[in-house]
Amino acid sequence: MTLMRQLMISAAAGAAILAVGAPAMAKTAPAAAQAAEQKITEADVIAAQNAWGKALVQIATEYDTKGAAAAKAVAEAVIDGAYGYNLGPVLFKPTLAAPPTTFRTTREGALAYFVGGDAKYPGDTGFALKGWRSYEIENAGILIYGDTAISMGNVRITDSKGAVTVVDKTWGYHRDDKGTLRIVLHHSSLPYSAN
Image (cartoon, rainbow, N blue to C red; front, side, top):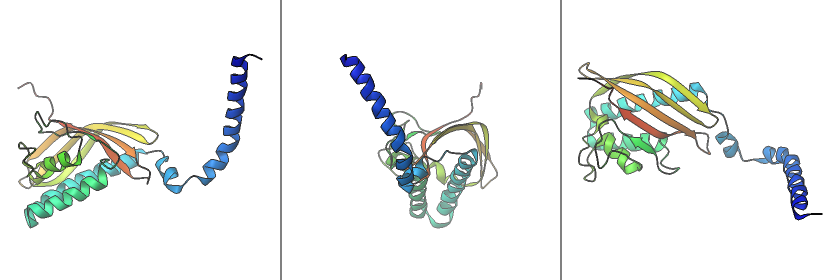
């Protein structure tokens, strides 16, 4: 028997063992792993988007009523609850960020963008502190691939004076091992204008 034939028989036997053992392993998989394997739904994505919009309004309102320290505490809780910095770098490109801090792969960079006050990000004045009072999300599309999803569309945010800002937004999501949907990609820009 040739070496190649022996390897093929061994591989086939290994595959058969794995196929037989797979159902038993699936029954004993930890609940956290099973939660992470749950397919993301469109409703999950829309709920995550709405949570983000409500959080933006909450940070702005907290700032207006209780000050910068209170707004920062809310922003930290939002980042820790919604974004995937606990999984590794997040691909975060804020709306009004410029070189050399255009891209924020760390929690620190995201926090600076939302509430400002970090000398490492001198251009940040706190996007979430701009008096936002309401939001509306209009998706151009949502793509779902098992435990990851991508959405793209417009976010319209209204401030306390009634002025509306429209932002082009792309979010990427991943379900973590506890079943929580995490933002792992956040790209934001102002709509193109020829003027």
